[in-house]
Image (tube, rainbow, N blue to C red):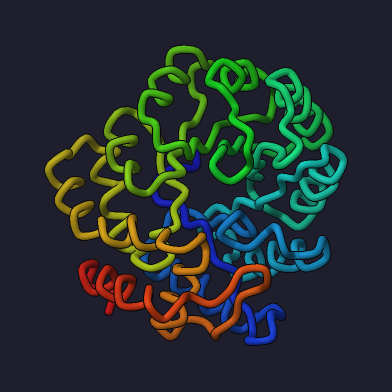
Length: 291
């Protein structure tokens, strides 16, 4: 079972926007040392939307090679084209990823039946554990709990990353899905409460900056230690908020750079964090005692 604090890893880049492989290796080791429970390579935070297919697969391969089986690697392989998602998922399996994270198709706004058939087709095409990813604020497409529950019965679909921040969604999916279906929060601000209510972990942006605290907080929540989880969460609250002061992953990439873990690189149409936002992110990092 993949559970706990799973980082949605940023993709380090040179200032010209090309991949920074040396920093990627360093970041993976940083997360292993800090106790991160799993790594998502090339999710939303990893700038999946602007990497071409070859780069996409290269990042997954580099992460798998660096991790060397020490923690699970989940490859982001979603797309708004079913055939493209199948192709990326096949490549991730061949590379050696432990599971795949598949965002709902963005922009083209499929129906609930379209969502079901899309994810069913991928699961039938590639025998690898697959995690659904619902983030309607980014995709314009909302997978409803009934559809997630329906997909929970499809072989190879093991769970869902629910990123609406609506905690009532957790109870709805729990009530409808098959036993053992894994539930991950995709919203750092409500991640502790999500796990206290029976979730299995969080796929986190904040974990890029404060991986040890995130691991400790989620471990406490999974064990039902509410007071401990809430106390740690209070230290992380500024990061949960200000890592979204501009579009993710803009603030996260700036923070990782400020920690000396990567270079000053991001790919257009995203831009470097505005100077008037940097003090807020720096203060949040200080609150979490990472600087």
